Length: 393
Image (cartoon, rainbow, N blue to C red; front, top):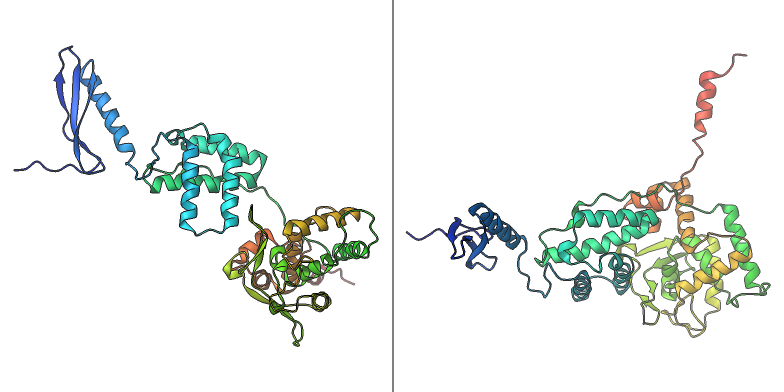
């Protein structure tokens, strides 16, 4: 009767021999991950010490499966980073912008802490301590580091270099309590006044105005669109002649490192495509802007450089920051207009409508990141209390 085959990753009965020098040899048959059975042995001064040495050797042997890649558990962490970035490019699922963001976060946040370690030396405790220390500086930086570290180590697990992902067991990061900030109507009008003052050429410093910033702000206020989505609006996306003027959000502006700024044919996500009815102040700003466009083609950008090329989002942010600094207004970013719109729609139409306008599939995102909570309790309570506890006349 043939000997029963061992299961992959297990060993058979341990045997013992005494060598010529008197040391004990413990040995056993072990079936490797390639299916071949091999004899593994270890020595010790006694049977027990030899057996312990053999079991430790076998345990280390079962810890890692061989990989088709050049990586091993003893590879330096930077080798995994290079392998992971190459794999992301081959997968071709992420946008260039996301790839560059992942690479930047890995190189600036993670590699400085793990660059001198081998993959075998990266465990749960080390990852957990790293993220907690980073979170003391910035929750967002810790969150970004956690994403890329989990993805890279996850690839090592999938390619059978590591047996498990230590990031699966680190402690949860706790977001500091914060309230989304939004502008009041008075602040919005103050910003409009500051921009109008600058565009009229009354400011003696800073970049020369081209007359577009005010219209960009009006479009953000009237659509809730992100700054990149606003800069990607074309003639063909605009309808200001129908009874209900509207703008279709179909793309965004991207600036990849080492490449020219370009229009991407979809917004931040494919589900963000939407047609937004616009208020009269936005329609008026769009009409004025369209009359100044030299390019009459349908694909002409509503906001562009003198050569008709896309504006960069960083340039618009820089202009806005300069203008508002002159007016003594600080802390306002293009994204704050998006939160301002969400807050206004939530107060008048509810969170579901606000989420729909912003292009969110989950209203929880809108509530958590975009809507400023009103501290005013429903005034109906005053009437109820009046009825319950009014003084007798």
